[in-house]
Image 1 (cartoon, rainbow, N blue to C red):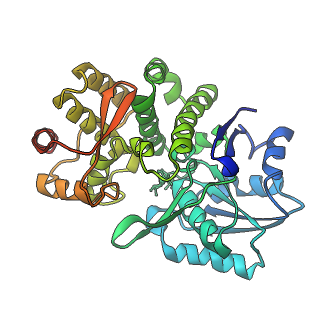
Image 2: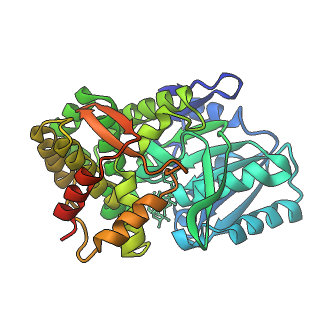
Image 3: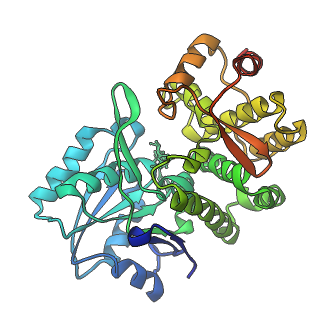
Length: 363
Ligand SMILES: NC(=O)c1ccc[n+]([C@@H]2O[C@H](COP(=O)([O-])OP(=O)(O)OC[C@H]3O[C@@H](n4cnc5c(N)ncnc54)[C@H](O)[C@@H]3O)[C@@H](O)[C@H]2O)c1
């Protein structure tokens, strides 16, 4: 069984690749799970994922005190109210601070359950079992947990590292094609910012990736997790290098905000944002046009959008970029490409270059 370690000293944890865990579970898979679950375990999932995988998971936990809570499905339920609901169930069902929580689902379930685990009785361990591509390569690793506030996305949260991440690539076969492609955008981001060989590998394997060949997926997800794990281990609370993972996100969040949450998926907005960041990088003289062309070809090859939605006003777009939570009191930060496989955090954004980029993209 392949594992990758997120090297965070006393809080280090493995990302374990357990294909088929939920459907058949080999003894080695069960061992890795059961040795981190104490005597009582509480599973948080949602109404879409539960019918697919909940019974399979609970059957592997027989002999433990088990409880579960099913969230309604959707980003609109990533709220404090749902966190209170989880905590109410924990208390009513007699779970205590020596219990372990399991998040079974996509990034929304992972973020809500992660935040509930971070604050229930000042924190209980959480195991992430992500079931979307985006959550397998991004949100389940790194310990960021959050819920939305009516005035802003992810405004309430905590760093709470999981004790284990279990990735079962077989769960991805039921994911709808749009959600699957959205996860690929984060994968392209990892390659673009950290590893040109990985970028070439993605270009060479487009067909197998689209077909969801499980061996190919396992290799790809492991590579992306490795990149994220290394960056998180270096800068757990995003004081510096972890900011590189926001490549494409400042533009992307403005697209999400202005087009109305839910219209454009996060990964779709990231795909367009990656191209806008590459465009800024070309105009500022950091990278050659060929890098942007290859990025464009790979993203469109994966079926992701490569043009901004129509009618996004430039002034509102700039205001949304400035309000991005990655911005600090000192101003907007932009992640730019220095080469294929190398990115940098730019503190002094050139307003003229930004204006040219926006004018070209927001017609
Ligand atoms: N914590 C972090 O570091 C981090 C990083 C990136 C994104 N996020 C957050 O993650 C969320 C997005 O996550 P997401 O893209 O996984 O979306 P999601 O959790 O909404 O899942 C997408 C859809 O797929 C369904 N689904 C999940 N697994 C499935 C499966 N195996 N088969 C069929 N359907 C399945 C879900 O029920 C949902 O309808 C956002 O809230 C975002 O803010 C967090």
